[in-house]
Length: 233
Image 1 (cartoon, rainbow, N blue to C red):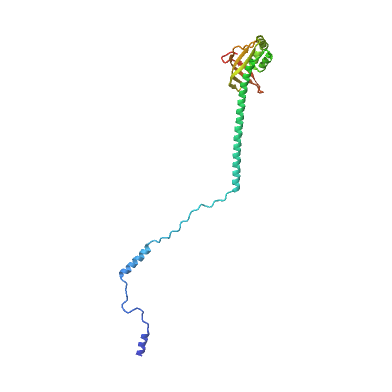
Image 2 (cartoon, rainbow, N blue to C red):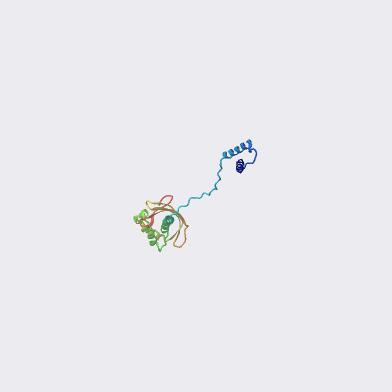
């Protein structure tokens, strides 16, 4: 009986720990481990930086092609209209300038022709020359020639001299135009040479005349008055 119990006790599993006193860690190592663990827990967890993404503009809205097309057409038409208007304005302005210059030249031409008709005649063309001069006059000048039978008296005077007279215009200048009366003042410089019946020329005589030219409602121009710049008529 005693042997059986001893056998049973021997059959029990022994502890795996080696014989001898249990090993214990030094207190300093334990404290260091606790301090390291506490330090690790105290450190903030740094999150890994995310890769930067490139910012892109928002997607463009699709353009209204039809609206853009109409706007382009309208802008083109406005540009063409503006150019056409500018060209038309320049054309009319140029025409107005040409018409004004042409009218001024007609005043000057009428004045010079009046002076030439007044001083130019030959013994064979006295009637024709005097009538041409009178028909190209109006206003006070026409009234003076028509009064007291002055036209016939002038013809008789030219026949009595039996001379030839020639007038050469040296220059003419427009002084101004009265827009109300349509009268223009023109200065004319003329040199008159008279030859007697034998064809001998007398010394030429220079004249400076201020001719008033009138334009009627039909655009016809005539010698309206005749004066000397220093006075007289």
